[in-house]
Amino acid sequence: MNEQIVARHWLALIAPKAAPALATSTVLILGRIWNANGAEHSVGNAALMVVLAAGAATAGAFAAAGRAGDPVIAGTAFAASGGLALAGVAGYTDGLSLPLLLWVLATAITYGIAARHWRTDRRDTVAHHRHTAERREEHGHIERVEALRAGAQIEVARTGAAYAEQLATALISRAALPGFNPQAVTDAGLPQLPTTDRESA
Image (cartoon, rainbow, N blue to C red; front, side):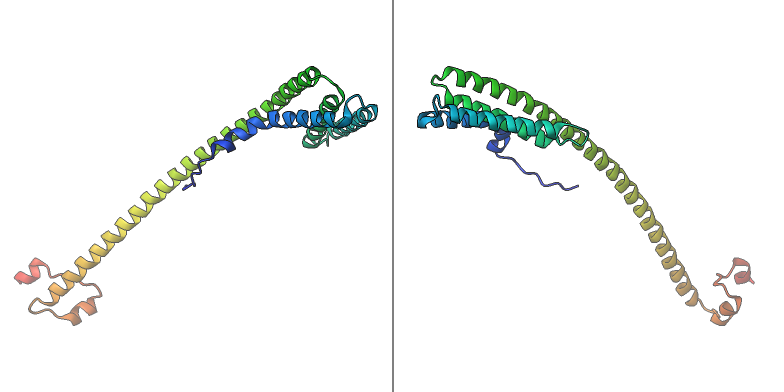
């Protein structure tokens, strides 16, 4: 019922939205650094990146195949394959136009895939909040009913205590009357007050 309220920092809120652009930008920057350090028009380096990208794509295809396929592993493998391909192109080409074009395409595809997961997470979060609110309302109703029941029991106990106090007061008052015989009350078994007829007799 008493949930801790935690205010998230604005960086924590925008970090997931900026992660795809940061990832593709990092790959592009590393590819251009690799280009400046001798990978430009290097067939061996290009072949290495093609083999690595193809291997990652194959691993993703195997991970996604069948009913027991793992979507997380498949998505990670396909993302690695795309990153390796982008890095290979950025490292091999001499101009900047093709790497930038691939960077824009990779970023757009990454945001498209991420948006689907964000919608799913948002839907799950809304469903969880709705379920929590319903359970909180149900528990609140049960608590109110139990509080009413406990209040009724307390009132009954108070009424019984008041009756016992009144009975004790009556017995004490009766014992103080002149001519009261406690042995007669004990023999009768019940503490009966004297009637008007007996008093007049």
